[in-house]
Image (cartoon, rainbow over all chains, first blue to last red; front, side, top):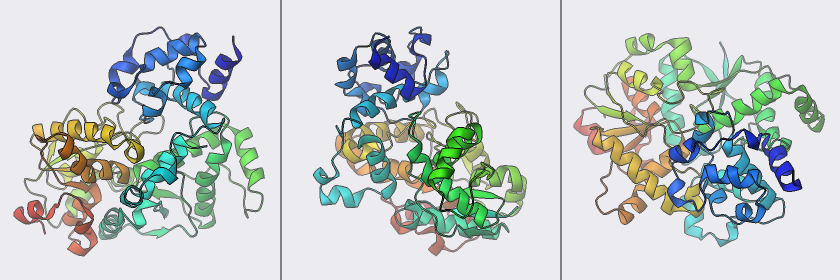
Length: 125
Length: 292
């Protein structure tokens, strides 16, 4: 197993090889239409250790951690945790997805604290 | 049962309508709660990474405050606070090693946390402790024929280990609305995510979700939607502006906190409803129904 696959499994606490590609995670994902690779494909690419395809994907930043995939996976894999692990690998390289300084004053004033805090918690290091 | 009330970051500002209506309604129901002294933000989202212990400090610190107050448990209103604090609590209960590290880190706290503070959502209190029968008996102003679509979103029901109702087909909000005399309108997208915090840097995706969720509720005949999360409220109510820009056919609907309808039914004053904090004005509908 490559160090990358080991890291993803460690950070997520999931056994990637349990997935048998039924596709139920992607079928129920509410934001799948904006993803470049689908949740079931994320798991497949992670099994294969295709690091760059995953870390450079848009999909890992589209996931809203709604947990729908997790509660429906027939193999009990927490897909949202795997996606969090991929985000964490990027964030721990200080590669933030959101820069609060780039938000306009109007954008910052508009959204409630619960939105700003959760966005910064998920998308910044 | 004496519960310590945890407000969380948004109930003191954007969601003041949630807090004021809830506190008025539960007082009318004879429930006494004290706000937790020196509470801090819970972090809003539960960290999903196995080694990320630092993000459990905030929830655990709040649970220590509940113990210091000598209360029997924590009462939450916001679905995200409920989820984050309850999940951290479950992790502390199931992992003595993690709990030891966290207590060690917070060695200046007067007491060490032992994983023994139960975390409740207000809906659980109403359903399981008070019971909806007693809530129904306390109704002073029935909601009449108001058609209410209850939106559960994510964090009240997922994951199943901490959810307060069935993970795919929850009914707790609908049951409460029926107890208040309303017509509960079931709709297929009641547990589908509004795209949550994507609203900060990707409001376009929220417009897609709001369009689908609101249109689904309207399609089933809803006149108003109720929520239990300030982020769902922002996305489903305030983001209707962006949604209407992207989808010209989009039709608006008022979005209320479930506690606002509860407060109306319990005879609370209009002041406790803070109806000026909404994007889509709920007043014409509520006035038309004789509810305000």
